Picture 1 (cartoon, rainbow, N blue to C red):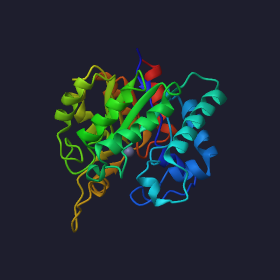
Picture 2: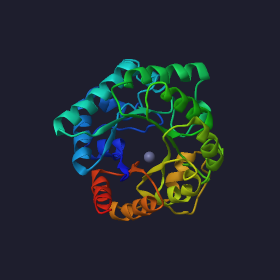
Picture 3: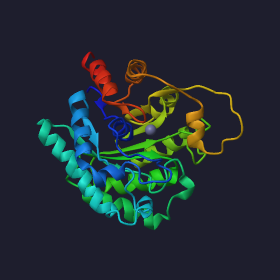
Length: 297
Ligand SMILES: [Zn+2]
């Protein structure tokens, strides 16, 4: 079977369309558009489908109970999850396609900050609520940008109760290319997660060349996927001190365009990836390039 193509970065697409998008560290980020301008989100889904995506992901990544506390007037996370599913369904109907929908299980607190995550009971309740909304309405549940074995395991285990297909995606974004933000080794985390008996383990929100390095660990799972950022690792001279793994990631990076990104995708496919797509700084132009690569197989 040919690899499936995931969609491009929601945040980047929103920014390129002039949407209000403050820092994800201090705001509700993309959830602002989900609340105030859902039409733009539907259009982004449609543009991704037309560019060649096989799977579109719900837009409620930042709509979690912890992050929504930042906007006391915001609707609840479960209402926003339902809306996010509806917007995907609307895009599939409008394009008259059989595009699959992935229901997002995001980190409950700030991305790349596993130290801020919730107690197990609270975390399970969050994922159970999302799971009940996704059940029968999505084709796959995708646990995204997981930054610790603890959060990834709880997310994937809960997802299994609500979806036949579960994907679990780790990030190693930070100052060590082979470790999660929790400091756990990606290799160990992947091996331990094979026991979860899910469909696919992935990495996302890492540099494209860093993602390639992860394949030696990812390929221990029955199927693996990658949706990286449109960048490669480049050590840059540091003045002062950076403690934040996200800042470290951006400090040591070089942007690449969709053509360059496509070369990495070809490599991942050659090495066996069955799901590919794009994370930060990727656009529908990247999806078009990936579509061409896969159509040529
Ligand atoms: Zn990313």
